[in-house]
Length: 213
Image (cartoon, rainbow, N blue to C red; front, side, top):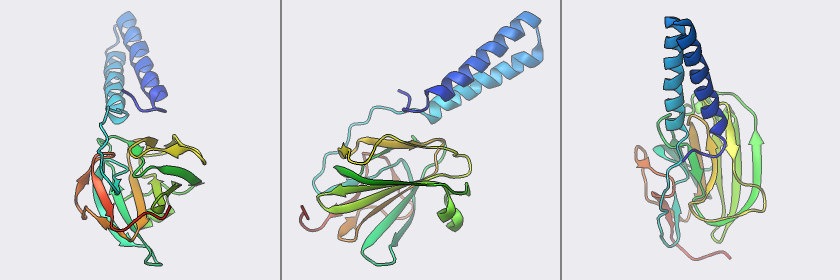
């Protein structure tokens, strides 16, 4: 299954490969044949990059799931010490579809234009990003999709006011990059820096006290 928003990329690459192969067969051009082979290779890469496999979402009580596939590269408290942010770096081989860590209602979506620096460095705070605030029974949480050097497009599948379930697809960052999840500090983390995580499968943190709502 291909991720929503990726079909055009795959079809364009496939059509380019087919057309150049057709031209190579007509003209017996070795150059066109080589270009066509590259086109088919790119098509296969796009299919790999944009795959969206079926995933059985983990069922757990009072836990937040990873919003992305990748590796935990940073964990830090916010300046007010009320929240904690876990940063997950996605390479180009990870599944790029992002999922909701918790059930709730999309409270706000804020898109910010920016640079395209490597998403694992400090200056990536200036990068293009999509900030999704979700109102949950534990309070507000934030999922931030951050573009990187290769990425030039963040795709959102949700809108303000939409109710989403834990593990539901909420968007995609084409060609991978970074996703931050910001949770209230009374969630106890289940991951550490360097851990590999999977969206909708890995428990990021568990709530240590009752509901707010």
